[in-house]
Image (cartoon, rainbow, N blue to C red; front, side, top):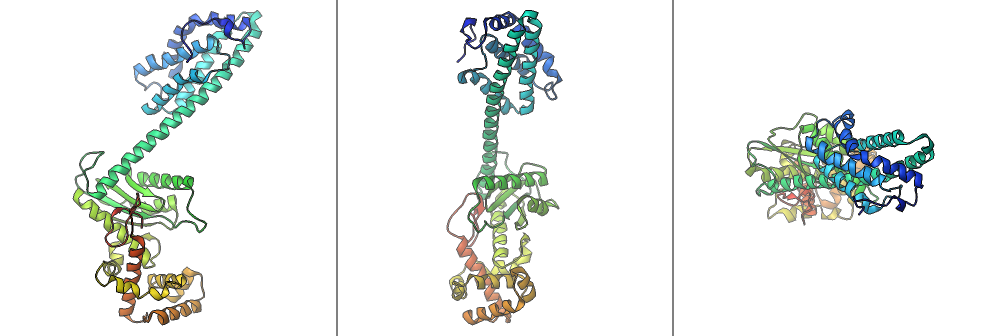
Length: 422
């Protein structure tokens, strides 16, 4: 660590004796210059005047004083890494206090300018070469310090953001599980509980971690803006739950905002709970509504319980669930037939609409439907068999979705548990 105490100017091998002598003559002016910068020079920066007096008059002035002495006592551009620790610690502190990065960096820029003016005004005409040496050394040192400060600030800011996000996730998880809220006041009154399922992964494989982070950041930003507050989101790459205490209904453009943020394939359902005790049940219901709507071939968008009442009812676990799911077992090796059945039922058995969704000729849809009926024995023209097909699709989807909790999503397979992926 570079010491604040006296140092032999001759130790600065990179500077000429004339440059070292000029720097030494400027050092007695450091205290007054640091005070003037903290009280007057930095006041021209937007946002600086609102800082607490102790930050301006003590910490910022002390940092400016340390930086100038560090340079004038021999720093010739080769700033040692440990000499930067002081500035890195202050940068992390400023990030924690919420000072904007541009404001922090401007203080360093103005400080360099003011020190240059002192060097220039102190230099005699015959010290022009020495002044040029110090100018080059000063700008080199500034580059090193600003780089270290920026890196430290951004690291601290990223850590703070991650901490706030985890706090929000913990609160959402606790409320959805019916546990005591660990990060805020007890929830009273209505709370909106939302479940969103994002677009399916690309055929080439899972999204990259960078793509997932960007997706979640866009989703969180869209939610916060739509509700006008920080929402408690428990999201992963596939979607998840959002809890908004004190809110009884969703904003009118919420679905549009989510589509713009994560893509047109998003599926959303929400419900209002009237007390904290109702939040877990609401979370299970909205996740199940989305799962059922997807399993039955309904197009992406907003799903309401009333829209899938029959399918929701038919998909409830019972002693007959395994036998109902087995009705579609003959289609297990023909995923294109299962997809056609799902889309066809979702399109209200309109063969032309089904053909459009699947990009097929209507005759091809007819051929597939005929094959489905041959393999399963179900008559899709009969109301009872159509209901059985819907129930079988829903039960199969529930079975496929069950089997574990993935942080951030919702469960499938029977009553949904908050926190698993469907």
